[in-house]
Image (cartoon, rainbow, N blue to C red; front, top):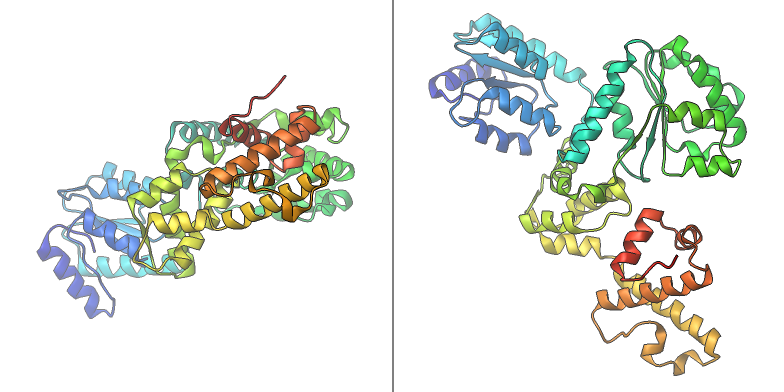
Length: 437
């Protein structure tokens, strides 16, 4: 119950408690925010006119941060039809005009509670991905694609890193109360592709990495797409691979690439919009609180800054795993900078030891010198310096060795190192290694 008038909120609380409900009171939007972060109420009664922040703005805030997971009943003593329509458009469940009749209050709350039981569990959405200009532009383009579906939904190709936000983009194109099907058994495309369409009529078929399809499965997908209009199914594929290059190498069907490329969109890597990471971290933590029933943990400012400044080669999936780890393993009431450093660098010691051993073995082979007689400097890094510097020394040695071995072929080097090309270039630049033409 959120209302700045003490008499109204206490009167409504007493009425609802007499009916057997548990009621928590908030005297303004700030108090409501604090309660919502630590609890998931079944229903919220929210006054529109409050001194610190109006109820419509708070409703929008909850919606944009993924916290609008419960029915919200708006209340106002001088509401208009326009205000009620606006509240409903944003996501309000119903609108009550003050003074509120007792029977009207009880009936509305009862209906809202039944609706709350049927709501799906919370999940990440495209809204959670951030508010930066690059993400805002992505949303605008997806809005445009979604609006074009009034005639027939065109297939969409989403291009971005593994573990990124492609699935969130695909779900953004899904209409409410329609099927979503992520295809994981690709052999269905080879054996009976058209059988996939009927159960997901009017919905979305999502394929997470279309480059993994073999030639027969690609032909099946091409056939499925040509028949998808009949079932009003939107086919959304994502990839982290260079499909035109695969086509040149005869590994990807040229007709399938032509159809998918007609509506294609690049999904930015997390490292391209790091300013969104603090809000993303909080959204992921909120989701764990909602779904896993874990104790809510706040992040201190230093912890959020450290997450924002870190590198994320595993993109959104890596950030999600780190946040889950922090929630489960941090001991204090707040997640601190020390906690973040502990989890971000938990594999560093093992990496450095393995790297030093590998360098020593390689130099032993090259120099035919017994490993036990190798000086510290011959092991690829000076082990008497800080860990981060030693790791940089080894990585520099590693990349310079393989660049020479691969005659500066970046594709081959990326394959050897097991890195995406974009991440490889960033790594070489970070280590001050010049890329020779």
